[in-house]
Length: 249
Image (cartoon, rainbow, N blue to C red; front, side):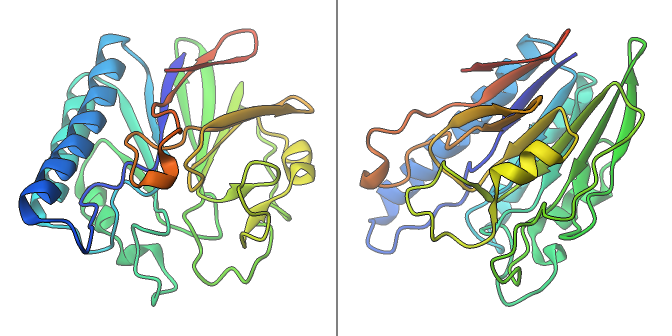
């Protein structure tokens, strides 16, 4: 089995002081880079397209951006690639306690993609692929988390051959400021009983392995400001072989 993991695309990015023509050009670049990831997933004939939040830069993007994202998901679906998404902090209204304030609710009408809208229940989905089973679950960002580790009480045990969790939180040791609230501790990764954790929110890509659990942060797909000038942009390919293998693209 193979999967593409991406996050933090920030479609419909807004810059207050950018001239309209330049703003549209920047938004076009962001869309093009997301489409390239979809192209890659189709060319590599992956089984899953895993998205870890902040597909959009705001909870009320223009129809053009929502339509574009829907077209890309439809492309994946037409090739038999299952899409799984969670909602990030930029995707939702922070005045709401629910992820259903996000434009992701549109995708729930589709037959193909799975959108994990819940911020507390990981809602696992188990799938069979060529005599192997994989359990994929997701936790959308909780804007009223109050700084608690979202995986402190997580129970990941199941009978599937592979287990994957999508999140949108910082992971201990990967952030510019460790004061970022709602951080997943390394101890929680060690104790989760999962094969793979994929997390958005942090814009610099990284990966780690703790007690048999691999954690990947795909980072951004387009630099958004000058603070990210030296950041790499890309996504992860995941291979489920004898063990979880990763490749940053």
